[in-house]
Structures are given as structure tokens and as C-alpha cells.
Length: 144
Image 1 (cartoon, one colour):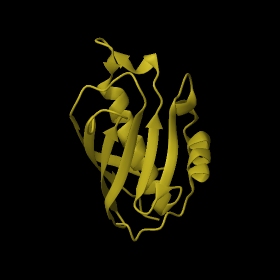
Image 2 (tube, helix red, strand yellow):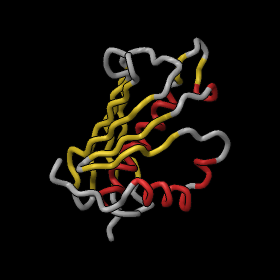
Image 3 (cartoon, one colour):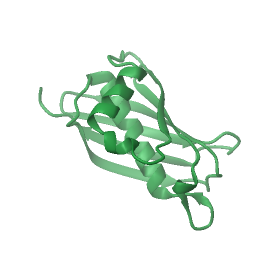
């Protein structure tokens, strides 16, 4: 999907999210869109103690939210500001215990059709020796 050209910039995506989903920014939100490119988006979950689970590791729900948000950003970056695009399928595999550090999520579109978008998300940390988690996700795109 490297032939896809984004139609929204990072600034446009962040402004859309601020306008349409202000509840995501309540409290100590630390998730930021870092980059968009052909068929992809990269997001960062900044380390915060609010995302820890017992045992001192980043919680699964925090990583699932990051992966879903990364896929949403990748889809919207390529179809435009369609707020009602929704997740229809989501699977995640946790591969190694994440450290108390930022997590980067790279979402890659594998298929972008009129009604469905399918992609995968790889989450990593510096020095982790490989991904900390991998997810696959399908989004339903509403008719225009």
C-alpha cells in the first residue's frame, strides 16, 4: 500500500481528534500522532504511571487503545475526516513485557477499499529487542 497518498497531515489529524473526540484529551493524555506516510501512521504513547498495571508494566488496555488509535489515524489520513469509521475486528498478540517507557505504534494499511480497511500495527520500544505487541484491525468505512 506504499502507493497510497495521505490526504490529511499530522496537524489536520490532531485537530480533527481534538474537535471530534475531546474526551480523549481529558486528564493526562500522552498519545500523539508522530507521522503519516504512504499507507501508514506512527503514534507514540508517552510513558505515564496511569498506564501501568500491577507488576509495573504497561497495561494491555493502554496498548490496545494505542493500536486502535494508530489504525484509526492511518485510515483517516488516507480517506479524510470520516468520524464514523469504526473498528469491526481487532486482534492483539502481546509479545514481550514492555518497559516503563514510551511505546511507538506503526499502523500499516494492507487493504483500503470503499467499505473496509484492513491493517496491522506493530508496537515497539527502544532497546526491547523486537516488538512488544502486534495487532491486526479491520475498520468499516461508512458510505459517503
